[in-house]
Image (tube, rainbow, N blue to C red; front, side, top):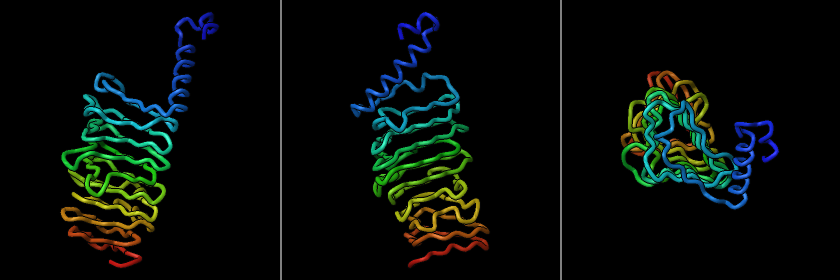
Length: 239
C-alpha cells in the first residue's frame, strides 16, 4: 500500500487493501461485527457482511429516514439476530437477509414489527427462520415475500400489516414446515409454495388462493383458514 501512494494520491487502493485484510482477519478469527449508526448514513442501498462474516446482531432499531435497499449476509453457520429490535427500510425499501449452513434468522420477542419494507427476501440455513414462540413479524408496503431454508429448516412467519403476496415460486422449506401465524398471505401465481414443504395456518391467519392452485406436503389448519374462489389447494398427506 505504501507503493500505491506514488500513483494513487487519494488512497483508494490502500484503503481497499486494508479493507480486504480486515475481512480476512475477521473471517479467520470468527469475530462478530456490530454495526451502529446506520440511521446516519444517507444511501439508496446498504450491504453488510458476506459469506465469510460472523453473526450479525441488532443492538437497536434501524429506521431509515429515506427508503433504502438493505442486504445483510452472515457467513456459513452464523446467524442474523434481530433480538427485540426492528428493521425499517422505508415504504419503498427492500430487505434481503441471508444465512447458510446451520445459520438462522432469529427474533427475540413476538410483538410489534420485525421488518418493515416493500419486497422482502429471507434465506436461512437449517436452523430456520423465527421460532414457535417468536415469529418473524412482517409489515410489507405492497411488495412480495420470498423465503427459503436449506436443510429442511422450519419457518415461523406472521403478517402484521396488509395482505402479503408470495414472490414467484418462492416459499420453500425443503421437507420442513412453513407456519403462517397471523394476517393474510396471497397466492399470486399457481404453485408458489414448495410441494415438499408442510404448511400450517394458525388462528388469525389466512392463505388466500383466489383462482390459483397449489400443492403442499401436508396442510395443517390450526384455527386459520385457506380461502379460494375457484382455486384448489392440494395436500399430498393428511389434512
